[in-house]
Length: 287
Image 1: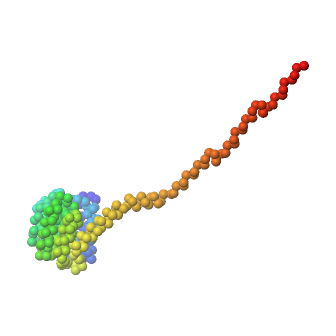
Image 2 (image 1 turned 180 degrees about the vertical axis):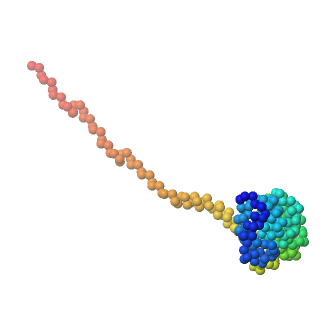
Image 3 (image 1 turned 135 degrees about the vertical axis):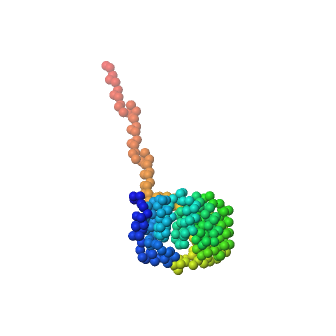
């Protein structure tokens, strides 16, 4: 698409909104201004726009919820500054925006670990949520994080989750599931911590969303992984067996008949002795 400007983008976004979607946003805690665009439609539009950092900064300045969700998705994680991350995070008061900001932008920036360290210790509910959502994202894909580091985070989650603010608490639970899905050692530690923690209660504004059970989600993740591994290992054997069963059976090679059976040779004629073959007349007697 041609290089967009913020006025054109806002006009397009406005045309994509619907009243039912606006009602859903409000039910989840969004405030005006907003257009009410479905996540699927916004994702399609994001692909058309592509990465555009300057546009992202302008979209954020509009204050519109949908425009801000688009902004965190088209911003360049390599160009976002620590100051912009802090400024944007401090303005968020809506959990779908907080989650998109954390996982699509902040976690992919080079400032991610610093933000985890600062925001997960913040008493602000939304900074805390963003920090723990970043940690969950890093636990799932950042190979540099050590088991020792993540073990400390498991301990911190277990000891503080029930006293954390509502949406921070929800993100801590999500982060625990992500850490427990990283490797077998962390699985055991996270699963055990989740069992000791018990049920995590979160007040969801829409009255419909459910708080995931960490023990159940960790168990299901590893069950699925084990199933995929077994299926992958069995696939070559199954394919070979299928190929073998599908191949037409070869006819056994015809047994060669002995030469004597294929063509019985007549016995060679016995030569008669010369005397027998032609008896010579006695020579005539001279008179």
